[in-house]
Length: 90
Ligand SMILES: [Zn+2]
Image 1 (tube, rainbow, N blue to C red):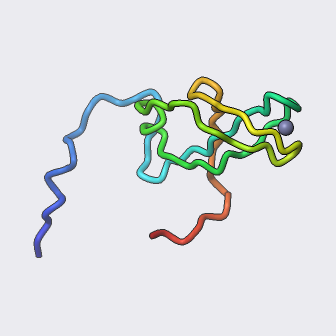
Image 2 (cartoon, helix red, strand yellow; image 1 turned 30 degrees about the horizontal axis):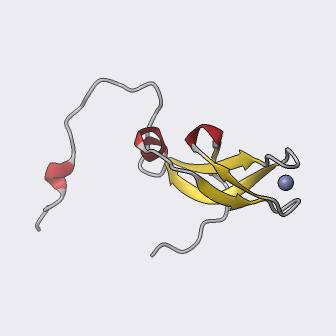
């Protein structure tokens, strides 16, 4: 048996503030700048990717009023994606 990927794992490190699991995912929501209602952008990403990532202006269209606006990283609200139906991987 080969374990080619085994070396990717780090050894036991200091515990982080948040318990990270491989499946920890965030749903990114924003609040519409026109009507003020929150909506799901459809973006899903791992917690640590969101923490490390940078977001330029992204366009999202509000499903409530149809207004399209640009949103930056600071505008995103993170929601736990647990329990939401997940699309088939791949
Ligand atoms: Zn709206």
